[in-house]
Image: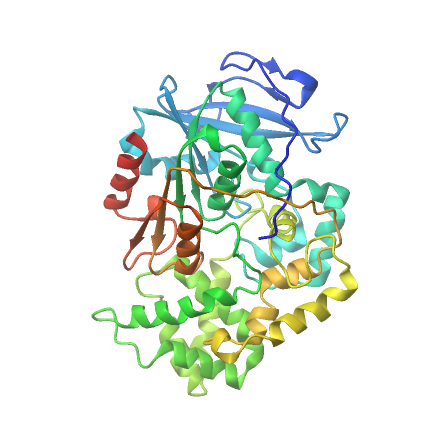
Length: 453
């Protein structure tokens, strides 16, 4: 990802767990913690952190970020749990997510929050939300992208990960925590690494589950394509699976016959990996039939992906997905402030340089016109400050990765492992995405042992 300036304006002091506390220079305020009002969250404590949208302007409007605290509120240790997306909420997912942390609930205060633009106060772009729902790779229409950008207006420059990192540091101070563990899942791992790079001395442990690397995640996604072939073949080698052919070769043949299907097949296979990493539903059979000229089962697969892709903004905000990714990702045309008229030409030229071997089993269309590329190509020009100094040297890190994860492919986990000297990488055979919540007890035990060291 492009490197952006990590300098943030955090001038706060004197925070506690008690009542409402105003912060120096009014960059943030904190309500303190009281029992959560929502019946489903009654077992936890809740509070609200209010931050400035634009940290460089004390006249800027404010954002309210709901915070939830579980585990042992009096514990000496604290862990911040970051959900993914970008676009997922925090507190509303607590009943499901916190089951993964039974092993540390007596020793840790566990904190979750709605990151800016998510959850209770999610950025809502109705057209874009309707088109993409909870799907990262669905190709949006230009009309929906432009409507979303118009809804956010100039505010869209304040939803980069840099802004979220500053919010997290406000939260640490609000909770009167000197040092804490950071645990991120999926895109939450990117935010976690960015925080650890900016505030290394404040991080005791870093857990990265289904990792997005900070330096090698490019929107063309070509570096991940080889993992798709490996995983599809691995699924079909599972005893009792009995696939009718080589699914990677079948996928490649389908795209030779209809290159325009590249983005749709990339989306569909990725979503299937989230839903059923063990067997991949009937995707290999659909690919084999389509390779033979019968697209019926492939269309059934697309329809099924449509069914489980829907989500409201409160569950997965496509407004924040666009605003954040279009600031954070690497693109062939440069950053979000690059001239809009030259983006298509630069993208075409960059993708034309990939060899068929690099693209296999997908094609140039999957790289050039996947949902992230199309969305951000159409996202209007916006200020995009540079980040420097993303070193994670010396951070105490545990990385967890599912061998069959295609949402955050294993190649990303390996890259992140190389970028964090001394880190430990645990690869779980036959497993998919979000291992702590969806994985076996052995994963949770590994995390517990790491965090209690």
